[in-house]
Length: 111
Picture (cartoon, rainbow, N blue to C red):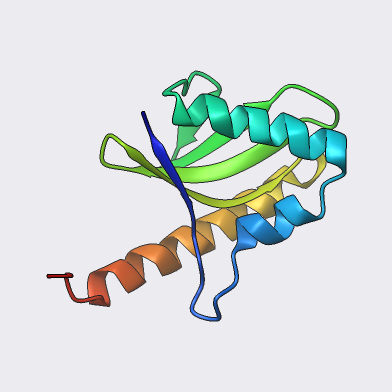
């Protein structure tokens, strides 16, 4: 089993949640199904590059979900998009991942 978490920025917003909330019902169902598959350990639709994962959903405009894996059982969701916005979405996800890693370095470990 894999745990999925949405990345939450300092201003308490989730880029993934913002994107997901704007999907129509049918697209949201397809993305939700993909996330369930991820939670069950099916990572076969993820293409990895530069430390970034792009989960490809072969439906409609070609939805994508951008993520990183932390350890064996945790995936952090950074955003989504479709084939038409892919280049911009990848740049944004990379910036968010850099922000995530920077914050992670400066946070004190929990006791």
